[in-house]
Image 1 (tube, rainbow, N blue to C red):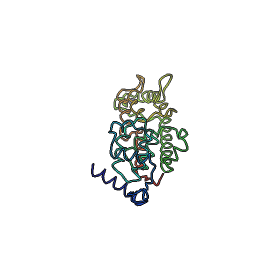
Image 2: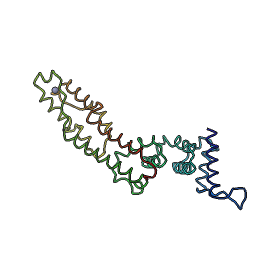
Image 3: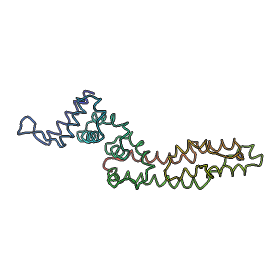
Length: 263
Ligand SMILES: [Zn+2]
């Protein structure tokens, strides 16, 4: 770690020398292509002069500068410090997290940021925010949201077929079973069905809807083993409702391939 620090400082000094004087006299100052504030941030991160406890209290704007200048000087040490202290911050806006993730190639931030943004209406983002993440990322976000909406609408309107047990098929009550399942899927009176959850304007995350599936209220007309089998099939890895998760995973993989020049 100490070697890395020394190396980062040496690189910073070289960058300054390459673009200015040698820094040995007033007449030959080092020329650093960064604001004094950004350079102070860099030094604080490199030397940890005020201790790690102070770093914990630094605002998001401090870390934005740290990442920027770490990128400028090519300092993995400072980038890693920023990743450590910014990584779990609850006040780190997901749009900004995605922007930094792409700009500074921080792949582990992409998935969590994207999963927060995927259920936010595009109209609620400002033009500046969309410019910041870049057109390529915006397109992936918009395409994925659109695919999920289409998929959800189709799932909501097309009741998934019941997976009947052998006893149910033999008893000749499978039609009642189907009707009970359809009512439960669509919801009735004050009972909210899965269909309503899928197209609700609040955009309930798919995983949350899936977790509620075992609580779906079916009438006594539905055979309990048919109910269990149907829920199991829908929740399985190839289940209809998990397609949304796959769409998100594909989008995250595409975003991870983006490089800063896409912004
Ligand atoms: Zn049945």
